[in-house]
Image (tube, rainbow, N blue to C red):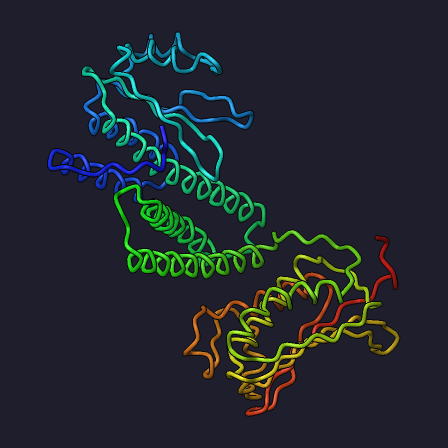
Length: 403
């Protein structure tokens, strides 16, 4: 079946569409993959008027296994136990005791990959509308399962790491990790529903509606990025953020960060320049240094007025007997008052000049913590009304990197 095909609803379809919508809402509030799976077979059977339903999910080797059933006896399910491959559809018909014309099976697709199979057995012959309805349900289920799986993995990882930290985090951090788990699922569902509507699964979409859906998705992804910042802060507080120390060429990582932020600077008619010494090499984690630079450049673009300038530079400096690699991010923004300069690196702190901008006050705190974990230092110089310069320094490494 062409999964992109659009079924035009008639009067007889209204109740079934309403039922599909209600299942979608229920999936949104399901907080685990197990809940999603059981709800799918039970409510899916009722939606299709089926006597039995089965949901199969793919394992790490892409083999399908029965994960949830409805209307299937225990002894029949026991005989079906084990993975199936080429005989999947024929064996499913036997498991569901389904006639050929009443058997429907559709794949679950997520991220372009087969993640499962949803099948039902109807006592009456199934038509094209039934197949479309089951396909629409499968699309919803695929999104809900991936969201629930990811949330389960994140929650389990956080619980394990928080326990391993032996009390390094307090009640606040544990509450934040639970909150993140609860928020991620509905955010994923919002993105999934928008995607389904953009694909016209529920009917034709006009251009104004498509633009509105795009704005909804953008807002949801912004909320997800804020959530990721909160989770990153929790992991840092727990001391479980992985850091891989290797030689890093600062010119290379600086160019990567500038390339990422250049479109945003151009949109505000800002001048973004890079002056990088190709020979400066430090010890650090390249991905984490890039994360810090992207955050600092992002803040510079955000707070520097239209037509302003932002400059990123790298150099080798000496501090006493120590040789250091230095990165400077300078802007012509409003500057930071002296009384606030220490506080801006504290979690959840928002300076008076930043209250109008989106965010929860974690970017600089995360950056400062990451730099410290890598054995470096993050400081700032600022003149109110003229601009701010953030300065990163890391212990220098060998002067050359192979390759």
